[in-house]
Image (cartoon, rainbow over all chains, first blue to last red; front, side, top):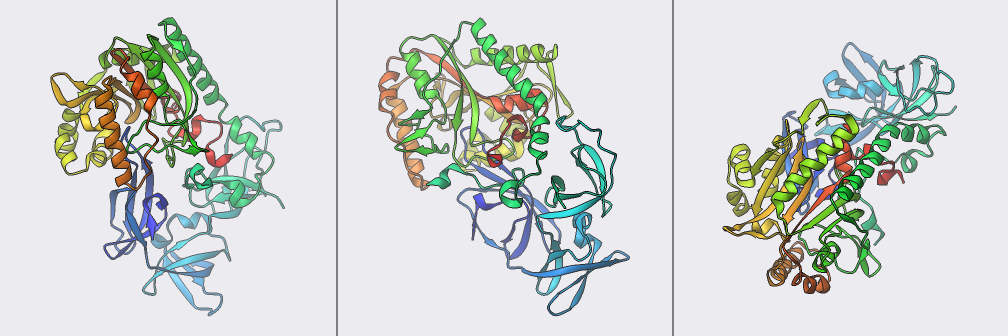
Length: 187
Length: 332
């Protein structure tokens, strides 16, 4: 069971028998009014979206979905192949089902495949993925505290804004939920 | 107990230290350096606010943050600290000073509200309150106009600001829209009806707030009296209270009252709020005895609370409250 204060982006809850994912979330509270939790919800089967506002007293059931750890193997046209490392079973997801996660999919990355009645619905990435910077302008020395950012390209082709001290060939940690730079990774 | 001091982290407020180990040695410096211009403007705004009120003969005060009894309100939760509380606003102490004959007061202080965390909420935030004896809420509408114009001219040399790509004209006159007009116009339902159905807050946040303060600021005024625990009822319509909220770009910036100065009526409303707290499963607050005693000596007055962090967001064109403070709570 979840209470309203547990709600956040990407949480999956069950409403009227269907699994929903929260795609947008904000805490709002008018002046002297009560705390409200505004959510955009997406039906994980039909893809239908709608907005709903909950109160702190509301409770939710977790969506009864199965998650299976699988490894990303390769893409083939616009299909993505994943493998279960214990049973060696392979499954395919469409580009739609993978969505933005494609920006962070590197070979052999372990992800969770979401299943509803044994059919794959989507994938959830680890919160943080380390990726190699494949293209970056060189660092103008001394530009450490300007608060500036510069665009770089990562090994997946994803473009991201990073601090100026990041250089080509370095590894950075990316928050897959926001798609933003988090920190430089050593080694 | 310790839980009371923390909010659940959400996506806007990651905690990299806990989740991923230390930042690289450059990262914190980089993050804070990126806020330098915003923090400079924040300091400039605070300085200018003090100048504005000094020029208008307001006395700056700083009343205690640690208090024994916050104002009983149904939906504002104080953080307990020992046997006392961190203030949710300086209102009660400010009014005791008014009752003692101080005519004009202002204060810039930290306030604390449990579990308020979002893109426009920090559980520890900075509030500006000011009070004027012998005036009502219409006077404060004019002072809000004067204050924001003064700040925009001081910072940018013109009576307008740009927020997230939209221009907001601060030159007179600002929009004045009654709560009931706003509900009928944007919500298609009367404010009374939403109260009867217990959906006032939902309709306000989902249909109305985003329409307020778009091309120029909006005063949303005359609230149903049950939504204004410390405001005076309108003399010609006791179902409404002399309360307004100021909105810019859909963001609620300030809340003002013509102050309620009848201690009997005030006790009755506090008692109602205490009962609502019990009904919501929250503990009632200690009874603010000294405040209620002082109230009988308080002259007719008006007062307002304005969120400094949101003001800085609006004046510096930042969409998230985290951007206008050096350290959001999850980065501490």
